[in-house]
Image 1 (cartoon, rainbow, N blue to C red):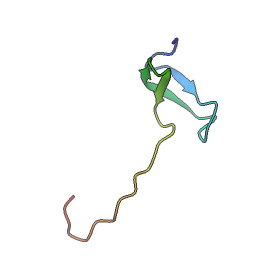
Image 2 (tube, helix red, strand yellow; image 1 turned 45 degrees about the horizontal axis):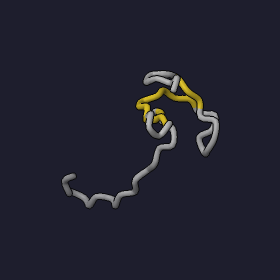
Image 3 (cartoon, rainbow, N blue to C red; image 1 turned 135 degrees about the vertical axis):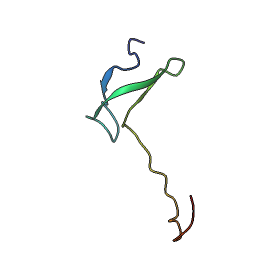
Length: 54
């Protein structure tokens, strides 16, 4: 694979197509890369009660 950590890449498919970001990690056995800011998920959490510690 010719892509290395730190390279700027552009997503071509999926919900984030057209977005650009830098490569954080390269997964050679799977032929995949992890790109900063692309395909992020939001984890929903219950709101904290007033006065409750984290």
